[in-house]
Amino acid sequence: MARKAAKAKSEESGLPEWAENETKGANFKEYDIINRTGYFLDINEQKKKADIQLYEALPDGRTIIEEIEISDKSSIRDFMKGFVYEYNIKISKAGLSKQLVELLKTKYQLDIEEIYKFDLENAQMMNVESDNISNDSDEEDDEK
Image 1: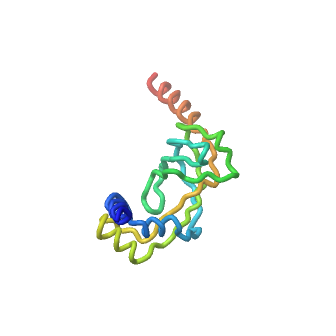
Image 2 (image 1 turned 90 degrees about the horizontal axis):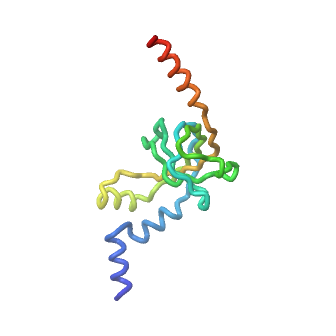
Image 3 (image 1 turned 180 degrees about the vertical axis):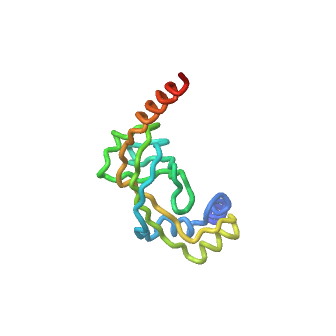
């Protein structure tokens, strides 16, 4: 009896257990590798994940990626928040079952047929500060 109550409670507060299992066990396939510019919002060295803000939107329209996986090829200790980087991002996607798609539409008003996974393959800091310095001095010359 307590088990049924616990299961019903978890379904009220989030996805049913079967739906969570489907998303956690999704079979992701590589979709694309893209280049974008942006900056780190948060860096978690222990989990080897980061949150990044992008200047150019991803194919699905988002400009923030939360908890992007950082490749072992990259040295996470060298990354710094607040600086502009050029990112190489590997996008993988997995389709959802018709049952889960229908649940998301009816219960959550979400029109989602696939989910995405993002991996940060490389991040190269860009030197954009020098551009601002030269623009500032040009503006000062114009004012004289």
